Image (cartoon, rainbow, N blue to C red):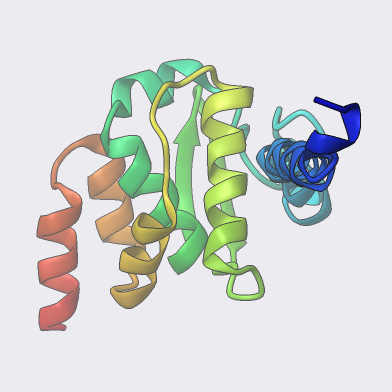
Length: 163
């Protein structure tokens, strides 16, 4: 067979390579989204800014939350969070607005960046989690109860739907 017999494969292989590079770039988009949207308050390395916003680099919190981490972080980015919060013995009393300007795909990417890259968590937030959280915004009290383990997302969502 001549080497030209398989020349039709060249475009296919090129497309596959480009596709895999695009997927890798998308996986890295969470960091870019974080730097462009979150770092001004939470710091470039998610270490927080005293008096402004708490650290997101908090492996103990995310390990303690375990699977609830998905519901909590999805709830925070879609509902926002304002009011007093304690993080590592430090008090914060600020306002984080809901991130309505970001798509569900972007929110999934940035939350996975915070959980997986910044905190070495194995949990994954998918677009469906973000969309469910958007459908039923949670109050500060419900987010706090979710954070502390007093309620589950299903309980918080059911209560919010009844409001």
